[in-house]
Image 1 (cartoon, chains in turn brown, blue):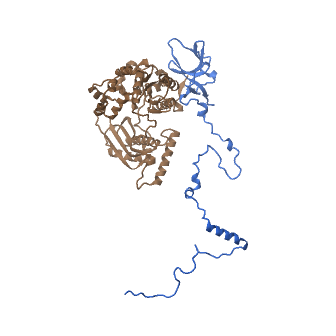
Image 2 (image 1 turned 180 degrees about the horizontal axis):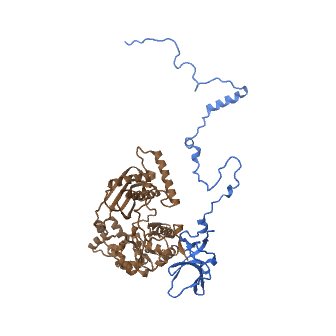
Length: 423
Length: 195
């Protein structure tokens, strides 16, 4: 019998902010996306006001004034550090862990011959005590059920933040599943939910009891697997080692619209630089790069233009210089003057492990070796001396286009000059 | 009719004469005293097969038969001569993270503002190492969240009374009033001072 636990931080970004700023406790808090655009995390108080995920900040201004909503710019440095601490604490509770996202992870609890609800409480208290992050624990015989259990633990106070579906009789479990809307199931998005509705499947129980063959024909094997998982048959194994990314994307919105090619060149250079760093960190090379620019779809009165171009590379590489050169070449081809660009991005594609790289007939291996060394040196300096200690001059030095982050909290845990203060 | 013309007369007949030696020979001069030894040696080489080096041994040069070497933490390269007497005492350099931090995930650095704890040697501008994993006990210096502020004080817990005690006459103790909430954030384990 397999047993999985899903542990997930409550309103993770908001909780991170509250660790170092107790003033935010009990107050309505939202964390906004890059450029202070939309809500990406909401405290319970804000959820209670009916603010949906992804609501643009300008749309909640009135509500914010009325209820004193505190809006914070996202501080991903802080969230990443607290996430690492949380995952590392959680890792001590099972020999098998899959970090699923910045704020959630699966643990395998197979063969743990103990009271799992009590164990879940220990996990919860330890993470909260050690890192300051409140979490909920969901336990079930499949990953899909563990995720659903986590949802129950979070939404229904009677479970006290830990829900082990294994403690329920088949009948009680079905009653519970009948009370949950089918859209809460892992992998059931809005489009699938609509289609399920046409088949009169509205609750989790209805999906669990649906004819799996019908589901496969109407949807896919993936959905059929979800049905099996709901029945307690584990089909999805734990992925302990995150597979190397097949695509690496780096794109941002600008702080203010950009019209000039020179400024776009700076932006895409620094995005390509960042993406190349990620590429080297996973010891991979890219065979192609994609660059795109676009105007704002929200400013309907302005002329609209958005274009992208994929540039295949003669030799797969992780060399920042070569990638930037390709990206700038592509940018020159897609750039049209006269538009107000608000976004640009770079995507590395065709990614393969550097070790299995095949060189072209004309590759200059000696030069190759020296650029590898140059890149390693660059990465090392930037790791030691801080981000962007050295960078390509084409990334620009003033960076007018950089993001707005008006109300970002300090990097409490990663910058000695920004430690939290205590009186 | 085919006629054969004899081109040459006389000469050696094939197959005639003494059987040839197995290989060409040379005549050498040896000291008389060694003659018997050398004759015996040649005789023995004729009767017993020569020593052969097995193939696998030839395939592996000596260097590759040794396991991959790990690099020692620190050591002198050994020269011919007297080895360094310090070699047996080599140890890893001190790592402050290891010495000062007990629970890596639960440890945070905070900076002190103000003078409420001068009596405990905590001054304005000092950095504190705070471990959230340690249980706060009576008498320890703790960081607590009181009324939305992080504050550093000594934790007093005796006979049902809980308070935070400042170590400066200018600051009153913080006693929990009704409806007031206090959360112990972590326990101070070290103070970092600049001198």
